[in-house]
Length: 147
Image (cartoon, rainbow, N blue to C red):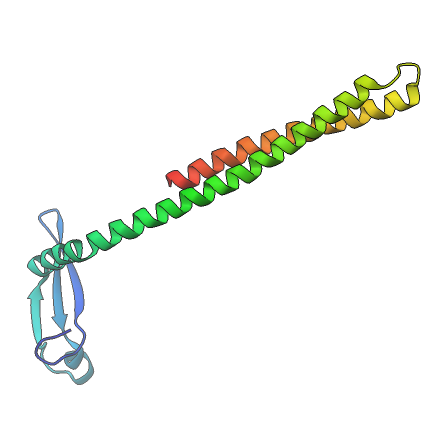
């Protein structure tokens, strides 16, 4: 904002000696009413002062917020990991149960044995799929958390 007229100032960028310099111009009246520019202020000192002020003002708050968000994300990832691990354990338990049923069947009763073997194979496939999904999701969670 212009300190003289209170209007918004515009920014102009100039390439000088391999770097980008800024100039703040109050030119609204000049554009709208064909009057001279109200003021022009070199931006080097202003940009540096505002940058330092922002770092001083925001750094403690930003750091505290970032740490809080990181802790919240970590706890949610741990909860989700625990739930996925329970699914794998449930699939493992069902596969073990199907294996025990198959092992206890009388071999002479082929129809029942075939049915129990098919059930056991299905439970093993479900266990393998649950383990693969668990590992993939763990990797994805690590990537998200690292970002």
